[in-house]
Length: 128
Image 1 (cartoon, one colour):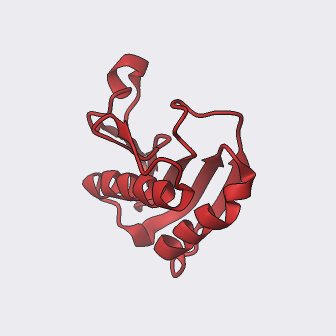
Image 2 (cartoon, one colour):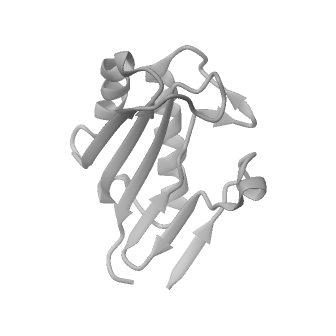
């Protein structure tokens, strides 16, 4: 069984994607940035953007029935690898005890010039 959950984000309808897809035992988020109500924030703050983006992803997973403790993988895409420590610190604040596998890679650009980080989060929700 596959279930799709939207968040009403500005690009979901025009691009054609879901915020979260639950497929079998996995709940997977789309790439998530620090965009709230169409506004990017906090501008220029990689730590803050990571906290906001991960918070949005975790809220979306919760609506799909997944708890933070069920997160097994995160991916972080940064526009400047020099932000590694700040992005990593925000990740550690949320996942320090959970310790999912994680990847961080530098990319040339994200969807908006103020985006510094985009995250993806995957959770194991069990056989349902």
